[in-house]
Length: 355
Ligand SMILES: [Zn+2]
Image 1 (tube, rainbow, N blue to C red):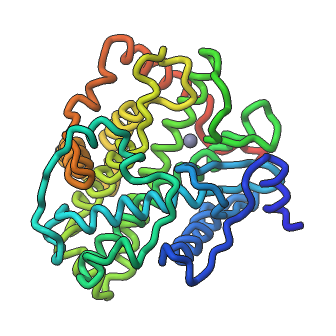
Image 2 (cartoon, rainbow, N blue to C red):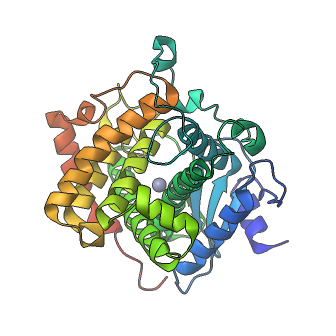
């Protein structure tokens, strides 16, 4: 038995998903190749492998055992495809030709449901059927690929962020620890703060890498027709690249939010509330000013991403916006919680020297 299959089985995870060129998603093969390259590209002494696994949930995990593994459930990929496809089908990003006239018809009953339910979490994505209305427009296809790439890379780099910082190996000092698995129980306050600090670190790692890789890709593939159009219409500057990635990450947090934190004490959760994660990434962009953008540009990118992420989710899903999403975690108790997490971060930051 292959070492990857053995480790998945040992940790009670589903087996690898068979990636076939004729898979109905149309795109799982190139993204599997991308995931493998991303895992190889972090260049550490430990072997790191990427795999899709069977399972319909919107989930991805990092695992540190004999080797390091990033596993994305097929259900996560399907949902990301459907989100990108819904964006391409709608009129958002109107500079890209072929979209419908942007139309917003919010529906109250839809607005009361979770975005991931509206995106039919668990249902396999069918490229032919779901892209029928817009696949004849090359620029909408380009938009689909651009959005899906950012979403896929952010999720994959988040898991790689756990691996890069040895979050599996540090925990209890033993191998075989899975990060981001569901059903890991309710931690006490100390473990909750540590777990949330790890999430903030992984998110920041993912934002940084996703922005850098997109910028580098646009430079390396500058001669391709697709790159020329993306440059001209969507991503003309470094500032636009940073803003595009941050906006889509906010969209992802908005869509993945389970709202299970609303009535809960903040230090009983494994993951920070989604708006908390978005706020932390806004702070990271301010602090790191990725691609050397100016402070004023970082400020502007954050403000545009807050509004843009909410506008995208409203138009794509035909729901009412929730302008209080970010500010819902801005009470005094939340600020104190934020500080506890930030104080914890140094304990989980950076690779272990003996890993
Ligand atoms: Zn995580």
